[in-house]
Image (cartoon, rainbow, N blue to C red; front, side, top):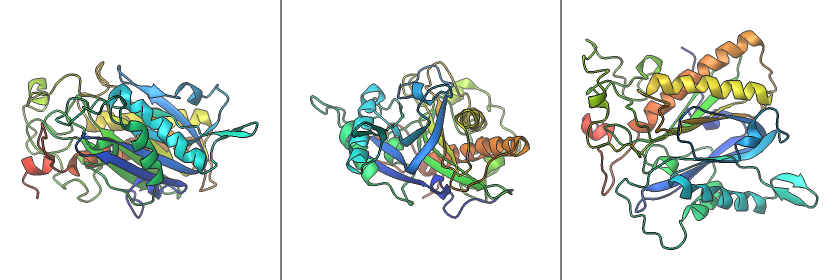
Length: 338
């Protein structure tokens, strides 16, 4: 098994920081992945119900090659306001795409649906996501909270609270890959009624409980009536993520990396990519390692993207903590962990 980076987090990828801002009364929040220098970026959307901003420019045939940050936000369409706050924070730092005498920060954004999760959404005239986006960028650092934090604050899955997860992998050639994901899936991250994670084959040590695969394999593992237990509503969906590497990639290669990372969704959530999920992966390539990737090495990079993403998804649910007015239990409370 390939080792993790020192933090086992997306910030093991040189050139990236992460900041969270959340409102626990609201049961929602924002996570910002901030690039020290503009990074090559791409996106792949495979869910049927996405909510996004500035994703068209990420296609390989379009002009802008790099971005300044990525925003993952709760709040459904209201959460797209988080990009405006993040843009204001980065503009204060002098960051952005130069146009004449102006700098325009480029911040692709994706949202998840957490409007019906027990939080108080009576925010008045304007939703709070612009301010949360500003705060998330200001909080960007190498160390950051996971679980019930940032964009994962109000996340739910089938049966358990969701959350914000992260993981990293260092390949044999020295290239690092990292994932950040807000897990709010229609499907389940656990196998049947057990506490075993679908992502167990990729677990590093005991990073999400060390339970491995169940023996014998549960008969209810594929029972969708089990997957949508505990009153899960069809509207509370979408898993949004960032896969990042310190390799030097083109936009087309970054697009291929985002596609590969979606395999991690399929390894960790069943079912995934449904018509009621907005499943999306952004890819970032900082180039900080100075290393390019040959075709054979890219196969390894894509495999690592999938396994790292699967681990991050399980960790997001594993790290969630209980809060007032929760609609669903945490994995830890249901399975007897603290």
